Image 1: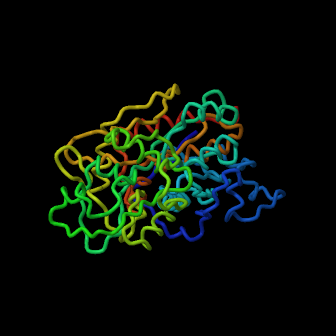
Image 2 (image 1 turned 90 degrees about the vertical axis):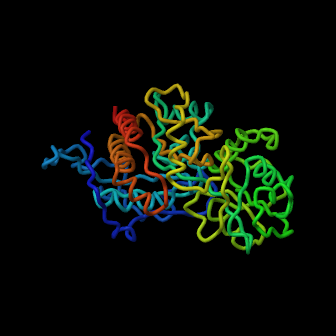
Image 3 (image 1 turned 90 degrees about the horizontal axis):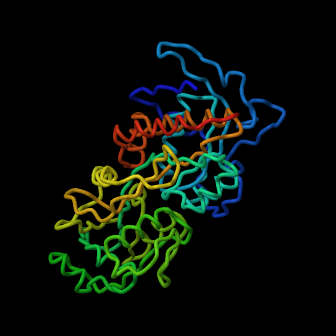
Length: 396
């Protein structure tokens, strides 16, 4: 397959014409194509989506760059709500390149997306955590013996957002942060918080911890961080499900932010792109307190090692949560685009490969950064991602 080469800029004017859903349905077994997709006529080849290969799907159209494949069809992706803003921008930009391709994205959460991949409901999913061993086994029936591949497409800090009028700056050491979220520290004027904030007028307001109610890759990333940096204060196993009862819970990224915005004294963890006007804490790293930024998050990714998934060419990462390097922000998520290594339908494989090539391109990473404040992947990681995408095949 000859992949598109993407230029330095992209127009987003067609965003309003795209079909991208972000519903709050937590049922991962629902077909995302039913949420916002146009009604299809099975007798019309143009409406047949991924099940119908267009006459041009294998054609080389020529041109100055040696030729690019013109594609048509539809795929229904789903998954992480954290990358929803980026996905909106990617889909808009990609339709400028491939106007006959429709991509739907249902932001049901990372766990729901991974379940949709295993069931065959979504040929492409977004997830803030890579597939665990059981999940990797579970996708083989749909994806073939080569299993699924992780492509890091979205790097973002997980911000610690809070609602505390009069306190615009806040430092939180890792151990203190863990005690707050474990509900061992219950008021904002607690001596442990005051010690690192001598100039702040901390009220005696009760702390309301707000967590995700749905299985969440953002939760899993945050718990990985707490486990790595504050094991004594955080005695829980890493999971996509929140382990502490007694706080407030809400579904998906938008849900927890809405609760914090309406609750004085509340605190939560959230993809930084969604926090809006909420204040955020600086986190203790080594001997300093570091505010979140795309650059500080990307620095942690560069210091991280590949995860051992047993799949050649896979790009799942074990993040360096306990780094003490200056200027790093270790509460970070890498949101993956997870695709099958093999698809029964060649046109589906071609669309997935071409779209992922756009996502990791300089152009795709730039539109995501502008839309969601994410950190563009490095040139080295982009090169490795392109090699991974080339593994994907279909129709064989």
